Length: 134
Image 1 (cartoon, one colour):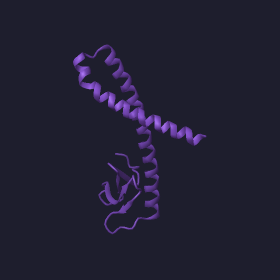
Image 2 (cartoon, one colour):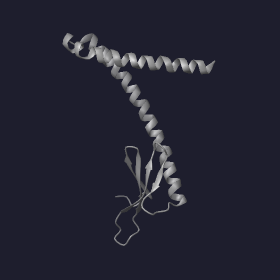
Image 3 (cartoon, one colour):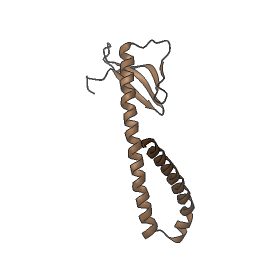
Image 4 (cartoon, one colour):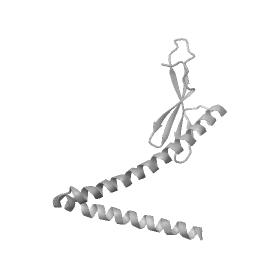
């Protein structure tokens, strides 16, 4: 393992991360990870672990991580949506060329309802954006 370890490690959790300070400057030269905080990415809460007081350096590094993490999550959201567009196209091709009547009967209503719901939301949101542009 590299001796140039970062001073902090963020263990990603569903809504944020557990924040650890990394220490290799001990007698045994072992990697020690001391949990210093828990971060909630959704609401921006940073809770020091136990009775700790976070240093300015700790807070700055946590803020940098939260900014970078939000960017990653936003990029993944767009990628997921673009992947959904691909799935819709593949589903259309499947329905047109491969699906049996039984398979179509099984999925048609669910697909039509989901597509109707999506279309309604997209049309409403587009109308809202157009009205704001006027």
